Amino acid sequence: MMAAFGFYKAEYFKYFMGIKGTEGSRLSCYIPDCSPELFSALKDIAASCAEWLENWSESKKFAAMNYAKRIRFLCGTNLASMAFL
Image 1: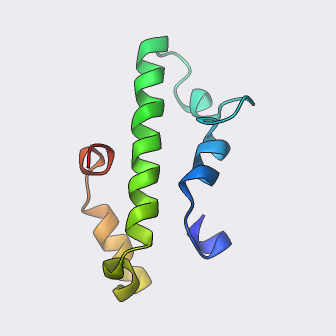
Image 2 (image 1 turned 180 degrees about the vertical axis):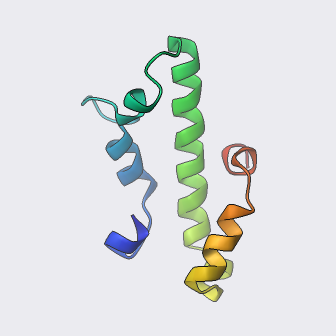
């Protein structure tokens, strides 16, 4: 999304994945056989991660990194860090 738009917006990700809005859910295509409770929890985690990514992409730390450093940083960041900060 960043490469396509030049910025990251959590809301775009949420609509694209079907986490927000009333249209079909791409997320359910990737995890079709999970329980409604698990699916709800995964939606919440994905939404939290999206918000974390948007905040990070607006930070001075992000601005100081080149593309390769951003990728390395993200590869070293675990999902729990993103979802619960």
